[in-house]
Length: 88
Image 1 (spheres, rainbow, N blue to C red):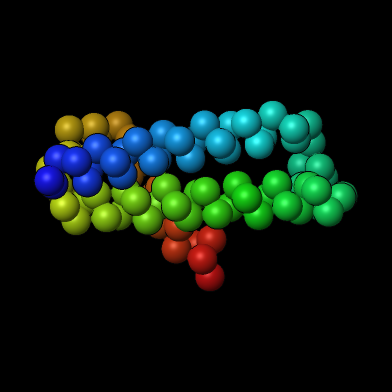
Image 2: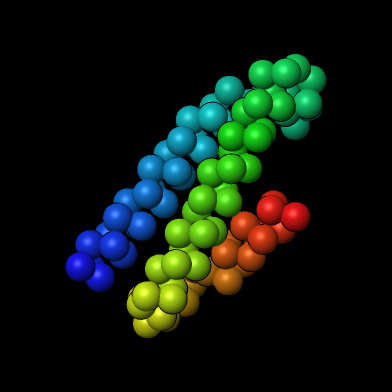
């Protein structure tokens, strides 16, 4: 059961990354996020997905702390803290 939860969490992280990439494809410059209501909506959607990623990774770390130790080249703590920054 624990393996399924971790697998589902990581699958959701990958799905969120793909959604973010797709939403960024519409953005050509920074001002695109604030120059139209649609741009603001895209920014909000990306921010929400980043929060989801951070939350899923935090939950996964609680379940299997050793998992992230296998990949020290990835700044896991920064990714998880980004969720806290966005949420403020």
